[in-house]
Length: 311
Ligand SMILES: NC(=O)c1ccc[n+]([C@@H]2O[C@H](COP(=O)([O-])OP(=O)(O)OC[C@H]3O[C@@H](n4cnc5c(N)ncnc54)[C@H](O)[C@@H]3O)[C@@H](O)[C@H]2O)c1
Image (cartoon, protein in one colour):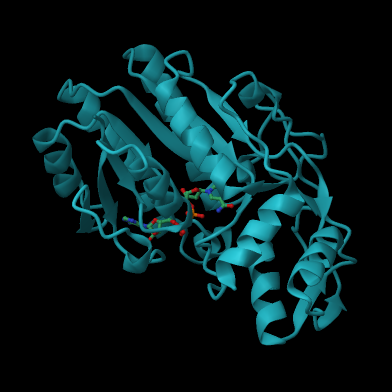
């Protein structure tokens, strides 16, 4: 029997993780989410799930929650998860994406609270526009937005706390996650879910550039499985891992596959590439692949599951 705290558990990745963890019949899960982006509909109706509609920026609330419960595992997913949003609201992003997380690890440290493992969700955004491919964890970073700065700074703080104070904590940089429960109507969704929305509605979709830009699309089931694996692997500590498929896919290829799966044709137009858009990104996934738990769902299989979840 294990108890989990998941911040951001009403969101896309957090709710998929909750579903996975509930498969073990004695796990209990506490979710803190302010529903700024997530939805209560994502949270399963179970007496093993406790939900607090609350912001992680309420430091006193988070301190009390941590002190009054003994969580075995802590998963930090709550964030202003949109890079565009962080450009609009850099200071607010910082308070959520960095300060609130520092408050959590500082509370664990100063109160000597016992826990088995803490996981923090960082992002491929930390790599920025540097041309070297594939992206490896030991490469120089180039965080170009407040979102990326806060992800990198929090990742480093967690690794430093883990080393300096011998706390069991680990980080991962997610690449482009897709799959069930991703909100296609959100203006901040990843490109893949926006394409899905436009295919279903027939509304126009604008390619910025020729569609040959590449991304590393990773199925959400593989991501939550990797989070659980990192939590349960004591050797994965004071470190950061890419979580990705390790494959480079063009936007045109994804659109073609989604058109085939849905039987719809995208109402597409093209505009010039936007300044600052990253042309190519994909991960070297060999570091996370050292663990047997890492699974790479082929894109065609993951897209089929995603389409089936929406139909
Ligand atoms: N989806 C991706 O492709 C991707 C890629 C890289 C990193 N990440 C990271 O993974 C994590 C989960 O992302 P997601 O795709 O599930 O996004 P999401 O927006 O669906 O989930 C984030 C959740 O955090 C909640 N939240 C935001 N601010 C909060 C606050 N102040 N207090 C409490 N809850 C708050 C939101 O309501 C939402 O439910 C985030 O940290 C994100 O930065 C995601």
